[in-house]
Image (tube, rainbow over all chains, first blue to last red; front, side):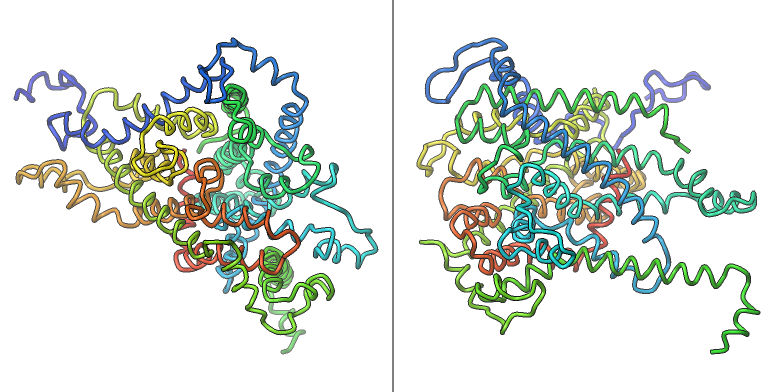
Length: 308
Length: 299
């Protein structure tokens, strides 16, 4: 052990970040399950998924290599394009709506008022409930026969609609339900973000004569941009994978076409029709879209995200 | 109350602020009630008769608590009760929770305290799996489970068994590793070093120092894993083939196909399947809130 050599210079090796075990084989013992999982359930399958996407395979007969044929047929398949469009619609509506509502609510809930905890619970509760059960409840709310929404709108003289089975209203109806369910998550994250803003910043702004709006514009919003950024990416990735509510709400109805999404398409192709190659190709398109959008989004952060 | 005196004494703007606050609280309560309406609607419907559901005013009270809807729902399917689904969900949630707690805490311990090569790269790789949509591995994982032999299944492989729904949880997970690593890093290293000097090996340090000190973080991971498993739909949908293996979510979805228009029974089923999560949430709201805040704040 010659640890005292060359004062002022780093030791031969920089101090390892952990030194509880001198033998690194211990680390591999602890990591073994995770490494196995990474290889067998993540990294390996991602590559396998691409390989499968190049084949025509129904699981019964051996896979047949078709090159990029699956990608070609997907991009000319009207059903896939509808799924793509619906997913895009769902994402560009539910994500901004959720962020804006969530931020507003977090600002409103960020107070010291007696009983605020109970009010918060009301907003948080939908988050933990299963989308399957909740979608059933909303299907009933939207129901053309006896549904509460048509009844309520009838009071204002609005004629009953078919909501979920109407091609125009189906996606917005699913978006509304999802925003309701996901709101609590965004609020919780924003509340934590708000509590991380030091009071001195507000005090300093007040001393400079900033009013409520000015304080929001020049203190809260800029300091919250990292939170907004991160919540945005989580919500985006989540939205692109929407499935449960579509499965419950769209499947029994006739015009499933107006609400199918990418993941529903993948599920249907792979596990209803057993077209494994097609399903894998569709999942790779999903992956590529999410990856490209995530990279672009990260690139954009220099322009609008302020780190303290 | 002497309003005039109050007005004189009040700092300008104070009264306005109080009014604004009252308006805000009223709005927040109204919004909260609006958020709760679907739940209320579900409970009310589950206690009504079918004719009441289609007849009366939307939020009218049931003519009496028609608990028979719950009984009908419970015994609605041939050969199994809803209790079977419930037990399946509980079993899978418990197995997944155990698997995640064990495997994630082990990996997190290595990342937080032990030296090894390519640590940064490996951690980055694990974090990257967070942004990979899991649907990408849906098909290959199905293919993999189809290759694994199973002694008791009809297909001879893992398809049609519950195994694909829990075994993977014993092989780590990005969220849990990240969460626990953060927590472990905050534990003073001297504790472990002292034990090391006394001859403890890393496993003993992990087992007797790090785990006991990390109960809040473990509870957070546990509760989230439980929730994710309990609420999962697509995996049970893909892998389960027989009614008696179904979880509450697939059970409900199956129900839906069988009970078109039988809303009271369906709402009773939905409520029963939600009940454990609602109870868990009310009992441990702080854990949920902290977990969600953590997962959002520290990317």
